[in-house]
Length: 448
Image (tube, rainbow, N blue to C red; front, side):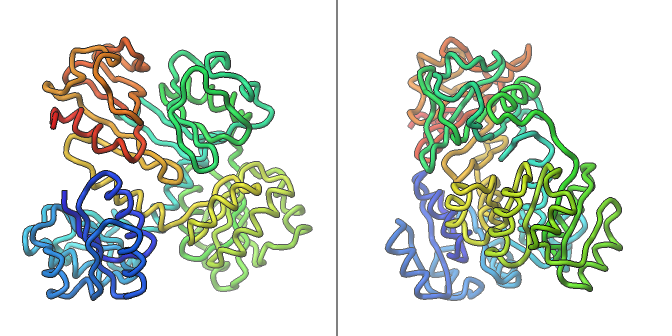
């Protein structure tokens, strides 16, 4: 597959890195020579310095030969023009990052006046949706569903008080209809065995039926219920979208906004929120407004340093779960290591959403996992796939990947070595980045 990426900032660079790990050919365009120099040194890609909306630059990138064009610059206009130009020369799939809501219809697609853009990613809306999804599940740091909601995947952090700490997986009592598919320890993602010993603060990925997954998540994270009370710092464009999404899911919010006009606007728009005209950085005020009773604290101001500091303060004051919005994903690991539960980057969420659209036609759905350390992919087993009609243990399944669940005619089954996938079954597969391309070939029937 040949992919042209326009914009080599954090979004474009991350997508290029993931695709090259999987063996795809990539061209990366950016108008900043320094960014292009870094990309040429760190990635095995074709790099071009120039305007991604320029016909000359696109021709230099052989855009007419591309399977996919991704436009992820900071300019909505450049992104849209580049996609329209790419579609004009026959590119099958075009994806654009568009931030300005004026260009979008109510369903978050590009207005009909703009043609040539197949998929649009709106970063703030994607981030608000992600937070609302996580907020509804106790202890969850990430959550996805597959096979029309029949299979659930939840990421949680192992609490130091969990009885699973220090024990091999075989002895921790995970429900039978749940598989612990991966463990993220610091920045190292592994596929565990029955002898793998969990540590406090490990991040684990649980796959299976909803009720079993929730039971396992509660046991490991020690979070038993969801409080529908949340506190939000910052109610600009992003904060307002987060608040609206949470209200839709039944949350009642206490919101701090230091800008008077923004606070008045938010109070007029939101129906189940208390909006306070205050910067929300004073410990006494936070305590008076009940931060200790909040199930969730979210820092979503336009200042990532302020977000980080306020999240740490809220955690120290007793907030159960804290989320900090950061622009630079380099801060995520550091911030999470010192107490904040989850650091989310709009750019990294955007990159993950874009990568979902880029999987082959044999992939029904895809989810990029924490720190982009792996993916969960949903396939329909092809008739000529090497796994069809054979026990998984006899298939020489790609190293670095594991089948988590099979959805067969008689229901959902956790996969084991003796499981026999049949043509037409749905398979939910966890794969490390280096194994993704091999896994796609296995399920498509491409045995090259």
